[in-house]
Length: 197
Image: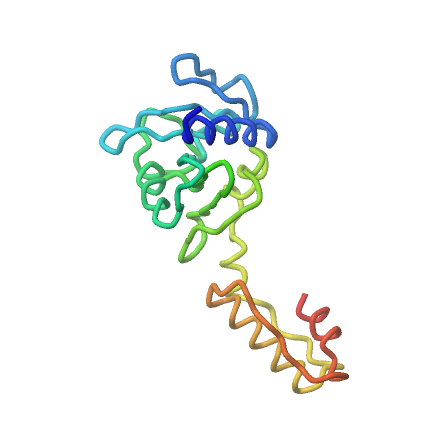
């Protein structure tokens, strides 16, 4: 079996495990299930999306599949082209499509184009159809909400804890998802973490 075929089998299995019904383009029925993944969907002028995802009978995202040994960095440009290349006759939640995946069947990246400064990030699994619908209907996406945090309740916090929480919020608002709070022993790291959460 070729590496691409092996990857496709893995991807099909993973999509099905997350509630997507796999269909070929020639036999597609977007009403057959809450979530339908149509293989090799033609996007005029752009190419062919490996999978077009339908949730609640409307296009909501694409999946770009690569062989297992492929490096996914840069592949989001290709899936981004498919997200914007949906034919006008196809019912969709939004245009361009809000969600894109790049996967080898071993590693999967996800892009939520509704977020400010959208970028791909590695995920453990595909989202379920109902979760993508929920995300598509949100008025504010998580990364956008992180840019407008409510004021810190400073009562009971030491100055070092307030500074740590403010720095953490600033880091998240700048789209830096990894942060480290480093404080001395006994300075209230646990209370700081709980207060930040």
